Amino acid sequence: MTAGHLLDPVTAAGDAPSAAGPSVPRRVPTPDAVLALLKPHTWFPPMWAFSCGVVSSGVSLEGRWPMLLLGIGLTGPLVCASSQAVNDWFDRHVDAINEPQRPIPSGRMPGRWGLGLAIAWSALSLAVATLLGPWGFVATTVAVALSWAYSAPPLRLKRNGWLGCLAVGLSYETLAWVTGAAVALGGARPSAAVLLVALLYGLGAHGILVLNDFKAVEGDRRMGIRSLPARHGEDAAAWIAVVTMYLAQAAVLALHAGWGTRAYMWWVAALILAQFPLAASLLVRPGPKAALYVSAFNVPFYVITMMITAFAIRNLGLATP
Image (cartoon, rainbow, N blue to C red; front, side):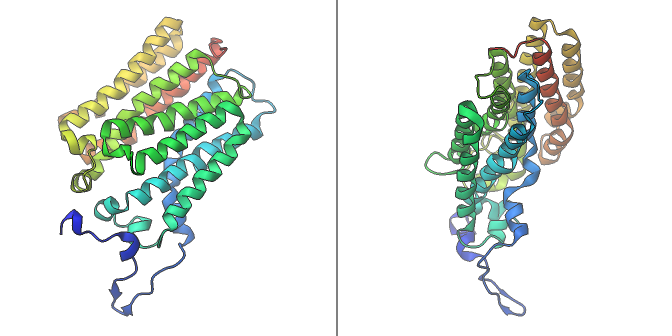
């Protein structure tokens, strides 16, 4: 069966007969299907970046906890969750090949419930963002727009591995960081140092997202999605992922050297060096398993350098615009 003959999971789900006779199509998703669609395990990166933004702002957290907790909820359970719902809806044909157990292709999310939830969660995200001041609202609006541009026609940026990973990296890291800093500053513009570091870590996240694409090479090729592993092969994609992550961190290390933050600089350098063994193993034997190991064990070092850098900006007084 070719990709062109695959059934749409929306119309096919629930139609297959079972041993006990024809199954009854589900009309309403179960709570566990909704939770699976929103993917709580993916919320950590933007929530962490938001927290880094708060720390880098340099302001006292006293009396600001309600607003900051609202911001963390916005970046994770709302904006990130809505992006996952959008992606799953427009990826339902690819997921029917790569991950048929997901809520939509499996039939646990029937009809057009997936699309409805994607729209509703995006609208709720924008509504909550109005409470966070102009910079917080603008950053959230751009993040929501990128999530739709990434997954939905006519742009569907994920069809291009370069643009798709860039869009998600900027959304999950850069915009979340900027939102955190802006919210902590009461809606004011974050400093140039904050904006530059947030941008660098968002660009580096491009490499992290390339690692995620290793698991879906077969389905991507069959459905015409030109992720970097599918487009250039796993060898080239491994180099792109590793070099992108290291270039971003090297640029941050150079900033530390320029700022004179020696203690912070050495911690960042040590964490970069700690990433070498697994990164080297990916370059020697690229594939889904090696990419998974790098994601599981190297990426935590990457995100720790984010918080170290946030504290450096805070303690050096670089948060002032």
